[in-house]
Image (tube, each protein chain N blue to C red):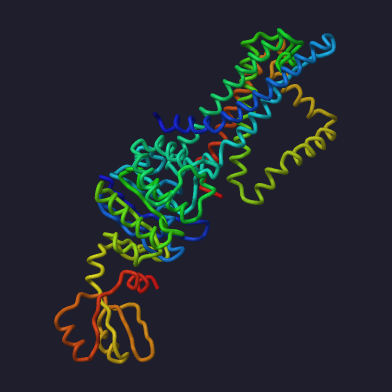
Length: 234
Length: 286
């Protein structure tokens, strides 16, 4: 087996327990909701379980670097192979979770009043479209988690503070510039998001999928700059 | 073949030059001792050989192929680092299994046998091991890897005298059973001298010498006696490591002993004796 695929296997081995626990909790919550909906048939609507997956998969991305990188180094795995292997693992987990979430969405929709995130944002969506859109969202989330941890790993003390503080500084600056420009900046951002996510084109989730996947790919390419010569650190 | 060629390697960490234009070759089927004082650049060199860090200048190749991000070359090297890189929450037996994934020639049964010999419980987690047993675990993994090149960086860290002796014996048995290129970097030179065939000595990032232990020790000797007489004896002779206690002086002469040397030493009432690797190392690197 190729070294990259061995890395994939290793990464997935350490993720499967977390995934199993996560879906056990989701299924328990759904059972709870089903029981509640039997008691109050008119009053219970439920949705957006995908947000939990977005958070979970982001954390999985955060957790997929330091320990596994050190183990890969202990086994003389070249950085490029580690990088490819981890991408394969991220994609495998993303496809799996998007698929399971779509199945959950389809099953829950038959029993209770349930709406997935895609359905909440785009209105009625087909299951294949929901699967693809979730796939894009989860891919972006896991890649963001991975980039965060890789950047944090490579950064010195000062740079770590910058990574930590950057979102806050960005929001403050954004608000300041937005106010100074008479809300033109936020208008431009909203316009961009509407076009990128397909809301401006007949609420097309496939455009959203393409944008999310492109974002994930860009993040992965950017991550490689940090992995390329990463040293072993404690 | 497993010939390691180190060509013009220079490595900077910021402004600090850790290695300075180091060039030498290591041949297949020998046990090398990589010796040097703290901060001499030994671990830097080993990290460069195994693609863990990258040279500022120069190139390292194995059988003509660069080691830089070269999976084929790196599959043939097992590097036991001083630092523990294994996940603390994992059991040793699982790490052996995962190591076999990356090193298909890894012999799990041999690893289990060695673990038993050393009293290493493979059902323990890495984080629960003492310093000594962490070293044993890493050394067992290295010995069982069955790669063409095995590198040990401070393999005896935290080991008691019995375990050190056992490890040297296992290293030799393993090597005799399957000759390969072995590199050992350690501070306990006198102990490891018994297993080394060649030494590579690095001082302040520069290669001081690379020679067989036999040639090195046979090409040097100690002269001991009254200080003034020793000084007379060593005039015009290449020497290192002057040691003086009271009026008695000992010097290491870097030459073969000839008959006329023995005669002169006799006339001056000086004692000539063999030199130990550790003494020679200290003299050469001080």
